[in-house]
Image 1 (cartoon, protein in one colour):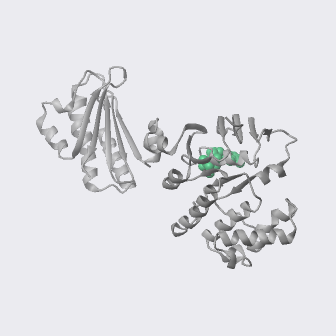
Image 2 (image 1 turned 60 degrees about the vertical axis):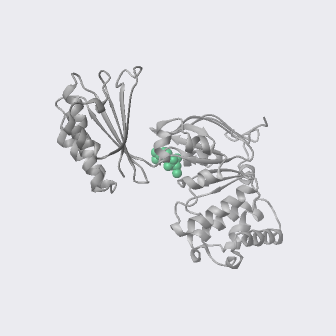
Image 3 (image 1 turned 135 degrees about the vertical axis):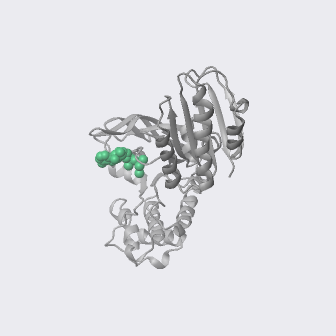
Length: 367
Ligand SMILES: Nc1ncnc2c1ncn2[C@@H]1O[C@H](COP(=O)(O)OP(=O)(O)O)[C@@H](O)[C@H]1O
Ligand SMILES: [Mg+2]
């Protein structure tokens, strides 16, 4: 295999007591289009800023094209020429016109003649349909236009790699696709890219590799098909499905059922879950977890996990300890009839290796 464009080894970054990156190891190959996804505060921006050496790592190394950019003698201007960055907030120079924004670095850093820089800038502007804005100031442009200019400004340095940190997060939704389309075109030209994004469809369609970060670690790394269709970990699956999750644990006969009802009601209210579903969840907890399960258990452990997906579908997983017991075999016909009215599909399995709670019940609610 060719030498990777970027080789990250044991990279750790701490700010005081916060450690946003914990011992990251990662290779990026030339031509890779990497989508970096994960919840906020998990170190995605910190990782991009380190690769572009806007931050200095606490420990570990980042090798770009064979050169350790964490070394004190690393020539930052060469690195910045090689790797361009696009920020959520565009970061255009407010006091310069569009054309001056694009020409600035080619003239002052790459020492292009003003004419050559101008010709190139106009060509790039044309490619994103904004040549008529050459003499405008950033404040006169829409967010989508400003971000297209920011991309063009980075391209004017002929970078080998581009880093995008949530390039469409600050945009009005109507402008997201115009910016995504420009990024797509740049990707097709073969520029290596890392893109932090919350737009899952965009990540899936543009990337050849998707990295899911959580808590400062790379949690899962694979092709879009692996990550989006066959995620290895439960956390990845929850994240990509944007699931809202509530877990209730009953581990004593003295459980405060009223406060559990309150938790369900708050969860329902917060996520705008329909009333019918709320009734189903309250019944499942009351009739099934308390009525059918708790009453027959000596030292109970019942976990009810409610997942509410963006598509409005609700799944409930109930795990419990004790001997094999499928609630479908329960003799409590009335309780069973009540809960079955809400259930579209139910499956039960007993996993003897699971010492904590071997009974697993998966319930899909009627939509
Ligand atoms: N310059 C900084 N000083 C102190 N803490 C920081 C700094 N930059 C980032 N952090 C902290 O590091 C964590 C990860 O931040 P960040 O990389 O921005 O996450 P993400 O981009 O995934 O949302 C957060 O807890 C953030 O508050
Ligand atoms: Mg960020």
